[in-house]
Length: 339
Image (cartoon, rainbow, N blue to C red):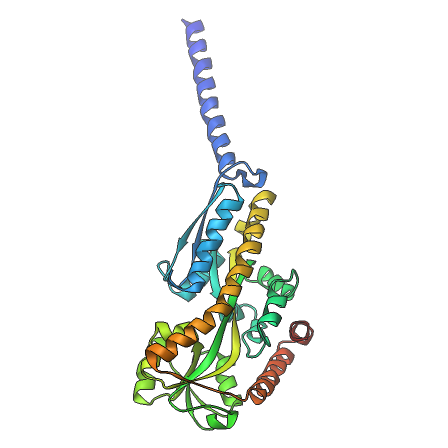
């Protein structure tokens, strides 16, 4: 009887050991990406709708990551702010609740004020200059390193090249035409200071209220991308667009760095390869889209595009850029971009 009890006890012990070993094995498998052994599920998000170039670019990036990883990485993309507004998405990628997002530069300034320099105007001269910086390996490396340092975000890809211009209820051909004019600004310090630099009187107004502000005269103009002017139907309440091209949108796709470092070298390479394919393609599309957007604003909304003397716009904007660079002690990093 005693012998039987010992056998039963021995078998029971082996059973428990088997369960524990299996459980530990499963736990290791769930974190086995460092060895390239498991499939990976990532979550990406943006506030941009799927029918915008920014939204389409993020979806294309996700699909190409899956392709480059031979299906080992799957990415679920949430568009149109379904995972929260821009602020909450930014906090979620920092906390790791979202794996990667598309973000405007302004949010990074919360942790790294030097990013206010990249948010300045006439940072890039034209398409060739823009592409030479963002498509090079180290064009913005200084700022990419800042993000890893704090708040712990890894840059994956750039999306941009969408030009910003000035829509107004009056014609603008020179800087003098802006003197004393009530121009809508976002809440960012860089934009507010820029309007003042140009001699305008900036009025801080949320994007959702710009239409009514132009309609009622609370604001006489606004600076936005051409596709935003169309999407928000500002052409119904504005009459002119001065094609200043003062900003070529520079947006970052960033990933929680801790999550990124958990990936195997093979999976990191798959993401890098996807970026090399998607980034230049969608930047080129952004520049090509400008002509189409201009035609729509003219034909559908009756907008008049004015010829602008941009030299003084550039001079005043570059003065602000250099002041910002000095303020944040990044003169050398700025010079590497604008030279």
